[in-house]
Length: 402
Image (cartoon, rainbow, N blue to C red):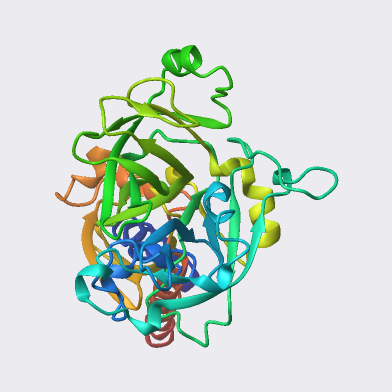
């Protein structure tokens, strides 16, 4: 008799456990942390940097200036951790024999309006490295064309003066689909006024192929620029930059380093110009291998993948007898500052009719949650053991005294 009661009680305990399984659901409080590497993406986080240079929206921009005449002769971008500067070879070949007559000013666009230079941003030239294709076999310079018109300027030791300087981001792959707001930035030759010239990258190459016999869409950009040459004209040197939007930041990416002449008329002329406002510019991707050899830790970015940064998710189990939803907290770390957002999401892998059913126990709930991937083993085992011990004690006591 006692054994029969013990068996029956055990059966009811098991049934109670199954019912409990059907009503104890595991939800998760998910904490997602997105970390933007402050070193790799320093160029995109300047607005949150306490050392951000208020005088320049392009802290990677570098101007090569004549020491006595104080006019700008070249424009480049900082691409290396040791402040290596990428410039157009056509520009620096004019100063390569008189480097001491020039200095480099980094991280300022309206410097001439302040009357004096920021000494923390002034650097001396140590070495100019021309692309190998700028030389003949005998070592003498030759004509530089679109495929070799690039050079690297190295500075004399910076003595730790890097707080206002960021490296420019370069494209790692040939994609322009997500890029917008393209423009040339820099200065006219022998001038001090910073200018921007709006540009549009043309995906249809018919015009460029028609007017430029050497145009190759794999290695060059076809561009239309927007400039009134009656107002702004001269020899321009500077980088082509485009931007993407991500995490409320505008991220500038450098695509090309070039120069062109804007005549005081209605047409553009120069080495690369053969039609009004149409221009071809060599892609920096052409020089990626050479840049990697000569520059310390250049920064590359793939715009499409950056728009969806991989995140690391930590799931914290929460046990409840209700149909509670999961709370997802997303924390983005940028230069030590936290940007948090909180969202609530329903549990996944649960059919709609079961999740919405709050009217009590039903057998289909039990079988639904009996799947191995849905059972919360720890509370169920504890519940079963405690119930079995309690009922067994009462059954044994009943057998002993009855």
